[in-house]
Length: 357
Image 1: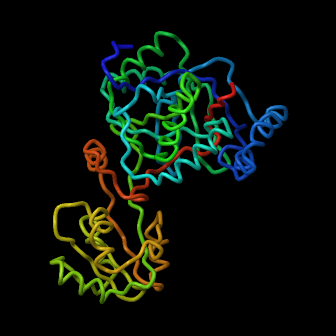
Image 2: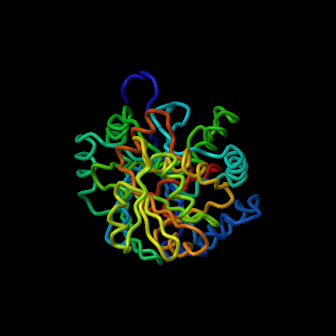
Image 3: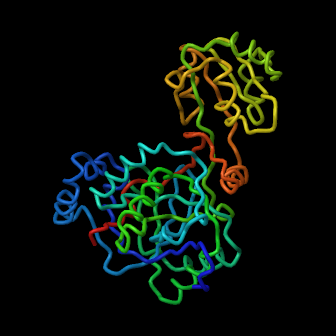
């Protein structure tokens, strides 16, 4: 590990807790984390006795590769020391403080990290070389779960290999891809419980230059809104509002514009200014349209948003790039909540961490 010169990504080995392969990603996996949360420890012990849960014998870092619908993602999984991470871990979306407080209470009751927080970065070539060499051997675990996600895992236990990985990731700056509220809750618990296992949390560090997470937009639908209101506001604001005859013509604009559909008509909107459309939508357009928060619904696919178009207007947003997300995170300008979707995510139960271990 290099000399401590400020914030660092300090990844440590941990004893992995794993659901048995036929439970990973299956609906039954959710039972162990269900209410009442205080009973989770007992349920976990019951599942251990029934051999539904496995505990690896010795601490290790893990290289976890999972494949969904032909897309493979590979990352390094370990305990992250949140007390030393500071600005080395950058959120890119805003969080709701009340949700963070509720989640912190739940996490403390569960005493379990049921899934790693996903972090993404541009790894150095030396890190990719090291990961390639470490995964040349046969994986320690290889299986396909009930949801069709294929998993391969390599345990990294050799002290020299662990130190090499630690040295190569220490100086990186990672962006949170998934788990903003969990990470904020982890920071809260670390501050409240110093010198305990709450100073660490489980993360998976994905190299976007190696096997990138796929970045998509989260779309909106606005109940009660109509295209006439949008068109009139565009004139007042100086936005470029364009009606389109066909769906195909409208969607052709999606890379750089907002696409609108009311169930019958199509349009695109090129907001004035240089901000990304999702920022302009929340900071300027929704207020200009007289839209209240309760009218706005979020959708992970365009199809889901378009299915609600007849209730008002579906709003399709262009997907930002990793560089745009990272730039906003480094500048301390978080995206609005539910602005980005990173896929695929590993299925629940593949790798977990028990804080009572």
